[in-house]
Image (cartoon, rainbow, N blue to C red):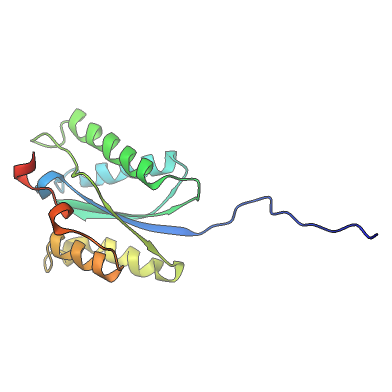
Length: 163
């Protein structure tokens, strides 16, 4: 009997690009242009320390967009939780904001094919221009619909009455 030649894969190969969006609590316009680059560099450092790759980061005064390439073993919820927790501490401990800074609960995460990478990077890079036309709420609902994500408006945005 002839021995079987069995080939086993010894490495995991992947290409997972994710667009993550989250807002300042109550969508308050607290991210100031004078320190937003510091915030983005800090968040990029968190992503890097978690062995993920930042593809783009930008936002406006009430929310941010992060585009990352992740490995399959990365827990998205753990990564976003760490980004929010650590960046909140960074903003507050460095006195960057004139109010207590915090992020809204929840986030949006959307996958993108590698062929759309430059389109997504360009979209994120042009957030300030984009938001002269469309609000965060309009943008987020449009993105949910484009990606076929079911949502309930009652739970989509924080309300001041809930705090």
